[in-house]
Length: 263
Length: 266
Image (cartoon, rainbow over all chains, first blue to last red):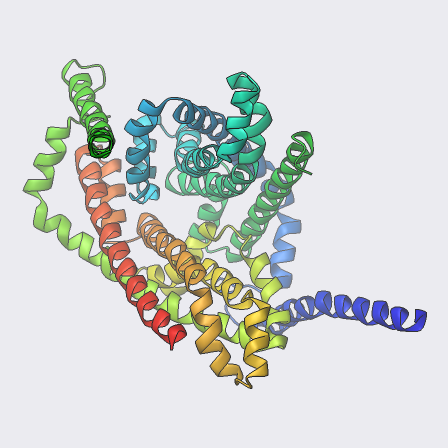
């Protein structure tokens, strides 16, 4: 019996090792083939630099890259926070006032159809070429998922629970914090994950259009000078920024779930 | 009894009339406020031209703008068709081959983390400033959600159904066509819808970065020339491009559900 259990755990741990190794193997073999082919065929560095050249570009331009993280990251995070707060406020308003909901909600959903990326140049025109235009655009682009999912979450709370609260004479605020909000939390979390990605997209597109700093700006400068290795290095840095934000939100949502007693 | 039902219908009629009228009146109210704010010179016309100006621009430059819209529509269409074909075939491979699934799937999820929007200049470097660059970029943006969501759908068929297929000695392909695919349709089309949005984003951003034609080019050109009315009119045209593409996708979705519900009923 114990031997069967032991072999089972051994085989399952073997399987999990293989599960981790196989994708890593594919990843590194692609990197290796990339490195080898570009080296062997002497492929133009300006079109596709070798992975080692990208690593070298990161080392050589370390201070340039790190100094451009903050302008991009701070605007993206600021936009996300503003969008979350305003979006939450709006969805609460729409949950508690039927009139507001009926007036606003169809318009918001209809507005969603317009490809929002197209508004980027107008934000530059409205708010100038400083960080305000990028912040405004990041808020604009990332607020919609928050409003829509949060409204859906607050609306879809189990009606029997609400009725129970009513019969126990809970105040509206109590019902909100003890029932509706915990119920809507999964909706909010998935919306926040979508929203931070969109805020990053908004800032990067804003930096493409007009900017004097930031990783998106650095990509465009490197593009102009045909320094493709620096371009890809900036993209890699953007990945790290995105990954950092994503894990930040994953952690925050875990804490929130614990706090509201969902876990 | 009858009286009660009639009352109910009457009440329903009033609510549904309110549900239609309220959003429309809010929309009209916003337009009127917009016109009023411009008339009273609270905002300069360069920042926000009156709605009448936008309509005038739309009427005067209809053919010119429709040409740009056609170019964007064409590029989005080609990119989306390619992304669908490629994305769905990759997810078929992932579903049918255990080995490919283990090797490819985690990499795909990691790849999704790359802010693909930042790659726009790279595609122009690789494919030039023509249509190819924007189509390739649209494909690159759209393919990940399509692959991830359709393979999630194809892999998560209820295990009872799969076991039933096995016990009825259905082949891998039979199981795939008759059980996995019909089950995965809702998720596949969710992925396709996200993919379509991203295709449009990709083409428009590609046009922002460098293009000689298309709605994105028109918007950024107009905005840099402080021609806000033209930029807003171009956004209206982009809305139509989006609506046409989405309507086409919804039609395909409708027929796909019809065909495959027939298969599963056989």
